[in-house]
Amino acid sequence: MDNRQLAEQILAGVGGSQNVASLVHCATRLRFNLKDGAKANRDGVKATDGVLALVEAGGQFQVVIGNTVGKVYEEVEKLMQAEAPVANASALGAEAASSKPAKKPKGAFVDIVSAIFAPFLGILGASGILKGLLALLLILGYIQDTTATYQILYAAADAIFYFFPVVIGYTSAKKFGGNIFLGMMVGAALIYPSIIELAKTGGSPTFLGLPLVLINYSGSVIPIILATFVLSKFEVVLDRIFPSAVRNFLTPFVCLVVVVPATFLVIGPAATSIGSALASAYLAIYGASSILAGAVMGACWQVFVIFGLHWGFVPIIFNNLGAFHQDTLLPLLMPAVLGQVGATAGVFMRTRDVKLKAMAGSAFAAGVFGITEPAIYGVTLARKMPFICGCVGGAIGSAIVGASHTVAFSFLLPSVVSFISFIPTTGIDGSVIGAAIGALVSFSIASIGTYLFGLPADER
Image (cartoon, rainbow, N blue to C red; front, side, top):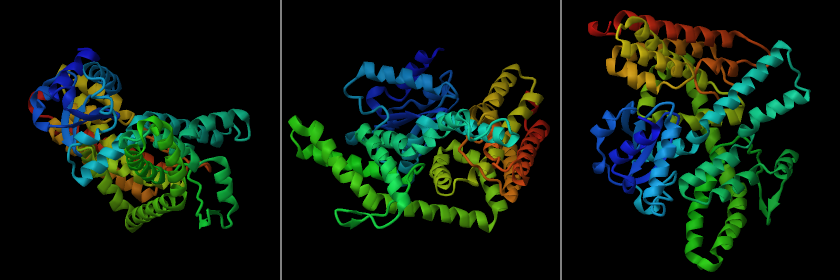
């Protein structure tokens, strides 16, 4: 069926547009927050042609679609707007306050993180690839960092990372139900050129006599998320106070006058301290045993993906990149992904079932570039042993990467192309070679194990 038909069946399966409190999507899933979960036809959604799986986790009703999820989301959005344009205006991407389903704190956290970061993951991946390619070209001597060509391409690659506060100001304000342009303005204020220059000069700046701790917030994540959360709550209070005749300009005016200084005075420094604490905690765990950290992440990462819990690690990765300009968590995830890719390759090589072979081939192609849900739900998890082989391969491969102390210098979805983000400007070293060995070991163990033991007799 086409995307329109698939959207119609999914929307009917979740109880119709009136039962949707909010809807966002990530790389492969439609993530619904439903007003009444009892109204959803779970079996009907699972049986829909085009739906890979149904996962209920993190307070969300997650429908796994695969690489075409963006197109299906657009069709669902059109259907919801056509059925109830006014009632559902706030349900697309931001929860209506009056109909929020109760969620456990952990579920709410995962929901928030996924809604904030999922919309621009593809752009992040593209930017990371371009940064990695530029670093490789520099090492090989094919380009010089003083040329205009390099500077323009680097600006294209680095812009989203530099302007993180603006981008996240948009997505987080949308998630929290605030004014998205106010969210962007708060983020822009954090990286305004004169503020960055003032932060560089040091000294003892003040705001109305109150001491300021100025920090370069470009590339930061946590400060703008907390600032937009406060902003969205403050907006609600102001809208109740001001009459409708002046609300449209007085609410933004007071928000800018109050929230921007409050962010520089309190929210920003507090959020930076939280980020530093998170980074220190992660480094302590990694420092205690990078091999054990790799084995645990390699074995468990795809399990986290199944339940949508992997989003909880995203702020740590971005926080590390912002604080230290490098991250050791991302490299540990690459073998975990390639383990499932290897298991899928094992199924492809072993099975004689034409339909399963076609499914495995398609899932393999997506998995190579970091999208493993088609492999998990369509190929490995249902047969159990291939999934286990993938996790075992991931654990061993990630342990090797941990032993090599591989670091990533930019964000990329864990995949084959991740290697270019591991290359330092000084050239390929032992850590990059260790990552290559870990990836190869993970893929090999998973594919060979699956080929030998992964399929029942009737599928060989």
